[in-house]
Length: 321
Image (cartoon, rainbow, N blue to C red; front, side, top):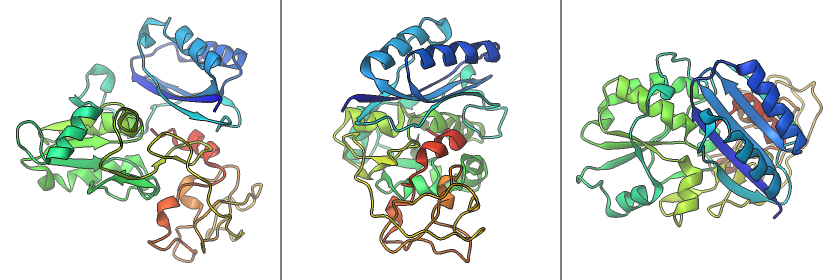
């Protein structure tokens, strides 16, 4: 596999966004990288793919800026770049939560590394003897692809729904050690701070997210694959692209199968018996049609819900990790 896929982020105050965007766009273009780089006043969030020499050269160049020095990336391999092009964008937040008081660049919640978390889960408690509760901060379609065993999740349509959901569920966390997790660490970093702010004690974030856990452990306590916001759709416990699914049939009914029915149609790799339609700007949860009149997946077919052909476009919309 010749392509290295990078996922990295850092919460750090940035005040030169337009100039920074131009420099990064120029450098990544010169190295023929593909993917998405998001900048906001609170930091950077990037997903890039290219040959080893190119991604190493880019990260070495980026580390030359003191604000990004030492920023570590999660890596995985694939035969082809899972992105169709390069985009460098400016946003209000690098991961949208709509909670401006949550500022990770000013300080983090405690983190637990992957080997320690596996040991806690193996023994059934943390080092102080408290029960460990895993809290998934991702969207529902991601969780359907894979999750930690017995993790709590709120069937979120988007991360902006997390604050209200966890606030209504505070009693669950009493006398427990809570570990929030997400794909690469960025969402659980904000989630852990929010939980602290509303009075939940003993909150940790999983350092490096699911990707780092699968990299540093044998994948124990994880079931299924890991949804990723690019053309691979999902990766397995070895961080390799998951096998594609059988093609579904195409339905072109606005408001049922796809709100983007007038966009360029594409066939979706869907679970057996599930039909859908995709456009170039389709968001992940629309692929199987979630309106009451649509044909959605059965519970048995849902674990591959997010693996649609246009996932590389979805990454640009969701910017999730």
